[in-house]
Image (tube, rainbow, N blue to C red):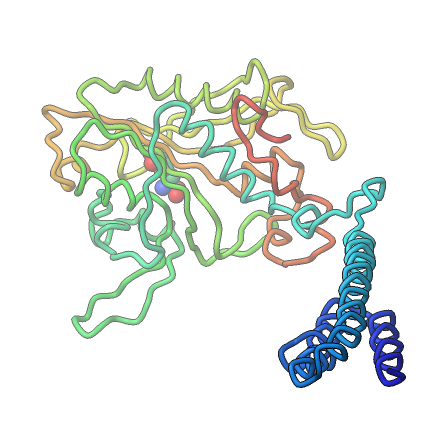
Length: 360
Ligand code: DAH
């Protein structure tokens, strides 16, 4: 019987020292599994005499019961310990301060901000956004817009020309967003109400000019659009954009080949020191060109000028950004200086809307 006592000691000690449920299971299988030490003892009972069987059987079964109880008790202890360890591991200190994610520290470029503001304002008025390529044909950039070949107005555009292609066609980097007017009229029937924000290019470089800059074109074509509508749209835009209830505006006669009559628009402002305020003062700042679409342009784009008329405008988005946010040098826009963007940039999640405020 002494070996049964040794087996009891060994098995109970193994149960007690099992450090996790897998180790405990291994002990169980070693003792009570098909080939386990206790199962083996039980299997020998059949070969004993009835008296011996009675005596040994009771002892082995008692050991089996004791081992099963010890296993259950140890299992409960291990389960509880595992749960406590998991709770400890996954504990969250809800009183810790919030750590800003990366997005909180990035900044939106003032120009992106201004483009989004402009789109938000005109979208509210019912305009769609149209787009065209930066590399444009001479035909769309000039000829269809009523700049005949050799016309002196072409020279005012300081154009970047590409090398002639296999057919001898010389493409240009578009000098304005007006070719998107052409593309739109060639593919859509009036009524048309679009704006075209985008990049434009001219060989020019100083404090207020960079070779790549940005414009937002506007075009309305239908049977009854008038100069009065144009003025209202531009006034409504300026009030919304500069976030002022009244903006003094001046429409000056001007010349563009693709509009007739043509005008340039100035807004009233006051400059003091480095500061500029809109809607008051005796200074005027030019912000855009506009006019009624020239009948030749309508004809060139397949729109009958006897039936339809339209108005258009084009404004410099970089210039609007400089004015609104007091940015003195356009060249800084494209220097990719992190200190500049940290100072002048906008919070990324504050999307400009008319209802929620344009500039946050
Ligand atoms: N395309 C002109 C420029 O870049 C701006 C412009 C003026 C656009 C009058 C227009 C317009 O649509 O009607 O100087």
